[in-house]
Length: 407
Ligand SMILES: [Zn+2]
Image 1 (cartoon, rainbow, N blue to C red):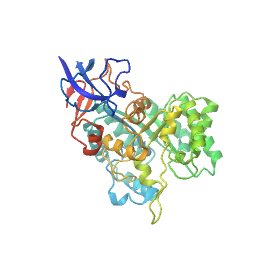
Image 2 (cartoon, helix red, strand yellow):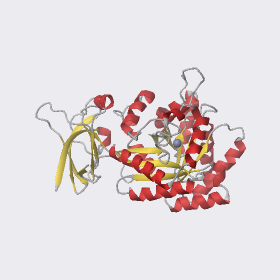
Image 3 (cartoon, rainbow, N blue to C red):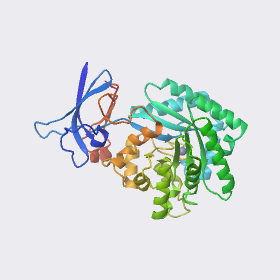
Image 4 (tube, rainbow, N blue to C red):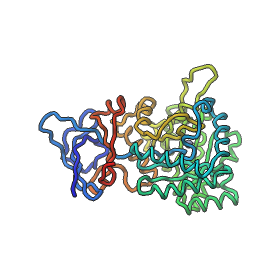
């Protein structure tokens, strides 16, 4: 059976090879009729209104390329209000109370919430070395398989870099790779022992390369020593030419470099195919804190400069209602709204929209890039509004079409 829907979609989410389209409006939207059958788009036709009818806004379902779903909904707001060191303490305590039942309940709730709000894929980092690390990984693996027909869930095993290069670390890395996971770690200031850091990073990347495993590191989530970790990874990549996918999550302090230094480093990062995931929610919550003063220095990845150099850049939620960030609800529309304010990149431009659609799809290596074309999945996130302005001002009701079926 064939179905169809007349909608306005962003031109940047529409097959560039389709040319017989109506005029693109000032918000970058174009009116079309999407036609599907058996779960796939079979035709895309221009919509020619007989009068001034305004069609509803639709986009492809969204992605969250960086979360910590094992801890989402684990903390109260009053415990998350004291910066990095307090957050680490609360995080450690939370681990000691984890049970299979608690984890299953929390993660299932998070996945359900994300799915209901139009998310089709999530990459999550998983604290792997805590006493509950093994249990956490098992629960997430089980749930990943349970959800596989609805939502792509990627797991990144998060452990200190020096651990990965021990015998136990190698064994763990092999298990992670066998279960389809990625390797993760943290690289940040102080870099006073930079020689060790360099050695650790190099050995870690050799390990990842030997296992042919993608890597996603928390790098430079700080206001200090701008861009040092990213520069270190870049120089190693220039020398060793690893051919694995390497993602730099945060990259916040790089935003504090001078325009010239930032441009030079961005160009070098693009040349070695580093990818970046910016995480403005937690950056604006945890970084730049001062005693009895309103912070005005807000480190965030220099998204515009990185994109201009050709780096694939995405934006993710990071923490949701845990020890590190007390808010959030896996609603990517709210994340886009916040990102508009802090980055001045808007979804009515290609650069602003790609951060949440095509760029995370590329990062996660998903089959569908989120562009509507013949043969693409009949998956549509439909809003009860006609403009971006209304979407981000009124947060209207939304509906999901998945594989040609309305939820
Ligand atoms: Zn994170």
